[in-house]
Image: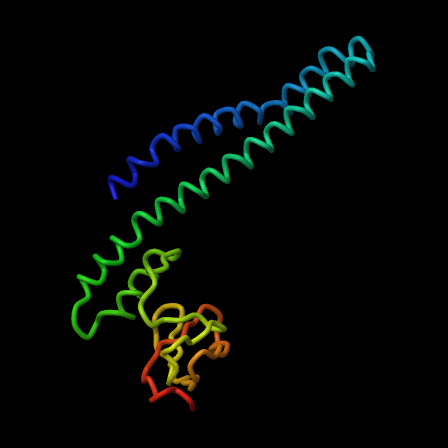
Length: 182
């Protein structure tokens, strides 16, 4: 995790510079009002008002663009960090939860304390509406927090799995049927 944080440090420095510029541009509305009261009202110059208003419009456009770039950079940094840390965190959780409390229990534990956690692909777990491949048979629904539900389905080979009863649930193979023709 320290290595992953070290790899993202230069990107955070760039995001910090963007944030500083955005914070300075936040003051442009206040400076605009000061200039209107100081220059435009005293001289009654329409040309000065148009010039200051165009500068304000450019400052707001620049602020919006920089904020958009900053949000995209943070999303990419977060995704890269998550890709680097998730497998190690998941492996550590699996080591902590040995025996009968492994698998779904570890998944529930991590989801409770880390809401955005998604494990690296567990072998056999398939999202709904995906092809069963060569492993058709009896599947059981598992909820988004790892809890098993009393909802079973039988799916032949190379057939799409049906939708689950709740959003975020997946199908786990329980038993592979011979040739899976049923």
